[in-house]
Image (cartoon, rainbow, N blue to C red):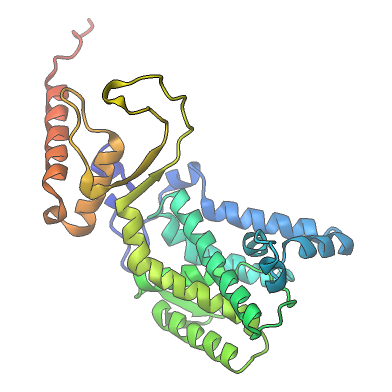
Length: 312
């Protein structure tokens, strides 16, 4: 895989704020499309009968008192439930427009984790307000709005010059829209507005999204978590340490050179090239520079090998 085969090697479109459209991305699958399909599917399921809808709400909707009593799954399940068709359409349209530029620069895993964390922060804040008595502890809440506002905060930081259309008519910079919606949510909570419980989820999701774009995204880019199936430990290995299948976080700053005769692995090269693209060659450590040099030498040696004799 060459440098220009990687996602970050494509310059963003200045007018849009994301990457140029690449059909191959759709062939590999879209996390945004998947999330929309899951939300729509659950809404159709809960709409099959009023009794089924009540049952789903009783099991999965947010409720501060229920979460405190151990129903912690509601912090996640409530993100996939919606109150009515308009609620669903608004959130899914927002997910489509806010999620596409992030989907093109992030991996599927990163997008899903961040999307879920945004909604999780919103629901945790909702629970805290319920415990404090600001929101009635039995008041239910559903919707993916915390996730959506989190994406809004991220896009507002990463692509501040992007333009959105309020009610599809009025153009406004996305950073201005994020600030305005954040202020509306804050004052709605402060003065007990009509939907101040939902606005609490919006505000917390938005704040987490802004934080993630400023701090968390850089952390994710330089830290890799790999959870592999645990292998059977050997009875004895060299050095006296048991072998396991777990691999713990590896910082890009601690990239080590490959063993003699072996090329650096593709993921290490990809991580280092991403760091060069984001911050320049001067941001690399000596070990990372050594890894790139060894990769280049390995490539030159491979290309210098004589090929098979031509066929007549």
